[in-house]
Image (tube, rainbow, N blue to C red; front, side, top):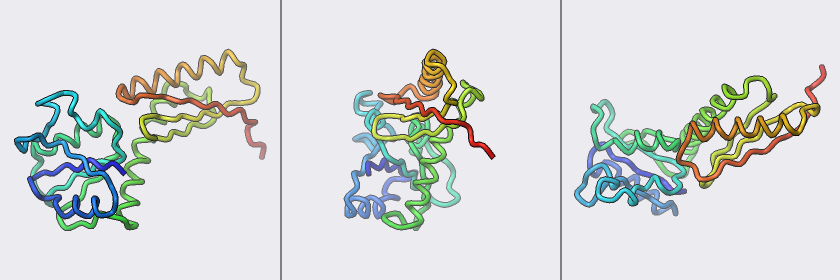
Length: 185
């Protein structure tokens, strides 16, 4: 995984970073060469969020006030990157608690996409699923078998517009359409 590690205080995530590297993950940081919270200040092209990030981890002291060092968490959320907050002493690495937290964060991001698509298309589609993948968003919509090709084309355009309005940073938006008869009870 490509993991963006954000520290509320310098050095708070040293153990976390060591475990991630040991377990084969790519650790990425927002900190600039002066210890500041943003690589993008020195060079906009250096921002780590211009590449795919699987999950962002905010390491912070429990009960500590928010700090400017946590700005990467704000940027991660703007880029629709799943964010997990860990407090000093929390375990992070392969294990059920971390995997569950990352999955919940990812699902929350995907649910945000589903909500904006549903708002755009209303009940013209039966079901919407979204998967956030490497440099792309994949949306699957389910429509009634009687839906015309022209209406499907219009729906796809509206779905794409909704995703693009919600996330201007993703490179690719793939949309699949499944024709299905409504379930008969």
